[in-house]
Length: 269
Image 1: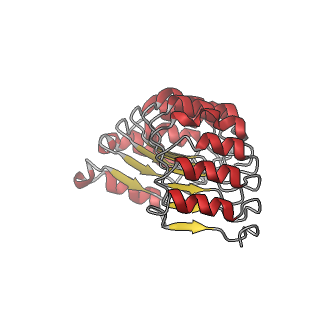
Image 2: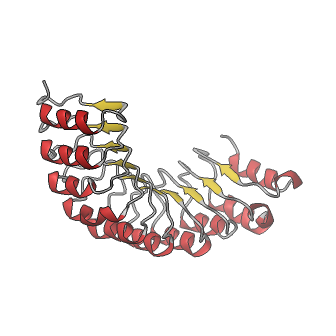
């Protein structure tokens, strides 16, 4: 999107955009902190009803820009900054200070965010419904547990490509009684013990265990016996599962399962 920043400023100056509720600037590479500062100073009134802001791939935006734009959007519910390598915990601090009604957060690829961000999120957004932490590599078990304990309304949790989390992180995940979607692709330190804890989230509909290489039949059978509403399950690349887990899945999830991926599961015949 060329000249996205200038075009956005021009649009928000028009009367017909005085009550805009959704803005997507996904991969608008030219938009930067200065644009957001101008919006704050000249277009504040236009964003008072904004509920959804997508800044995915806007890599010129830093904590300064996050502070500026979120100060205009007090009713914001959905905030997405996928693949932002400038954002830090300070940016999240501005977010939680300015926007009190967030229910959907996408921090995917924000590699500088740490447990401090998770603490800020868990302390300020107890009604959070969706959280994407894909490739947030600085986060640890203790930070994730804070989310489990304090954000008990989570329905969707994406932990794709986060091999740092261990079974310890999942000991308190059963608190998430509303959880429906869980993506653990690449969770190489997840074993059957952790998966048995995850099995207590009985409303799970979608579970991605791709390349969770320490998992065996024991963990998958625990999932099958407890999560009887599963529609999607990926066991892609798990060599430790056999036909035994398929038998358990067929008994418990046959009426709901629509997608089962067992590619690369060499123990399944």
